[in-house]
Amino acid sequence: MNKSEKEQAVAEIQEKVSKAQGMFFTDFAGIKVEQMTELRREFRKSGIEYTVVKNTLAKKALQNVSGYDKVLDKLVGPTGIAFAYDDPAAPAKIIQKFREKNEKFSLKICVIEKQVYDGSRLKELASMPSRAEVVAGILGSINSPITGVIGTINAVLRDVVGVLGAIEQKKAA
Image (cartoon, rainbow, N blue to C red; front, top):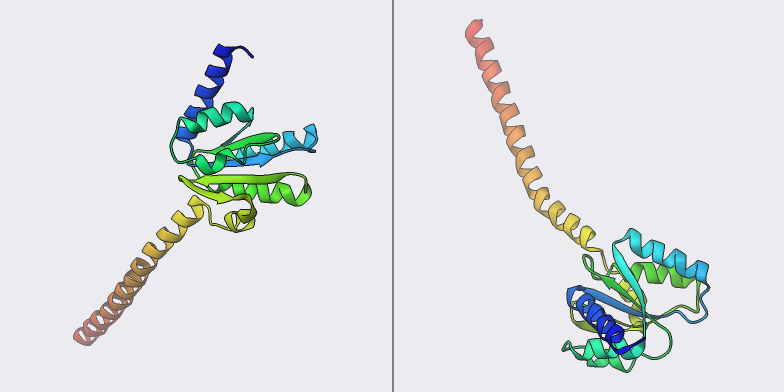
């Protein structure tokens, strides 16, 4: 890799870092090609970009962006980075599920919305609700009181219609 190729690779990594809401740095030593292909497929399904990086290039890219000092010393050995752009915690669920079948695969460290977490907290991060689940919960909470109010109004209207019907019957008689 010549100097211009390295500079281009650093710029690409830096761009991904600046756009990503979540980054998961993994160690894939001992994982077979078929297993990595399966992992990449799962990431793609969720809109997550997974890239194998050279540690020196990743370090240079991270040094150009503030707030990633704690990550630098974790960049040893084979490193892959999962970049999450929409749901910052989504890779945790995929990594946790993949790790259950492939114990050699591990999470070194991750960054979710500029907050750094050690890889030992993978189970905790994987149990976090996804952005879609949080939105659904909020919408459900908002709709719940409205549904109750509408039900009450409907009940009152039924009673009013019943009373008006009774009055009509008495007038007709």
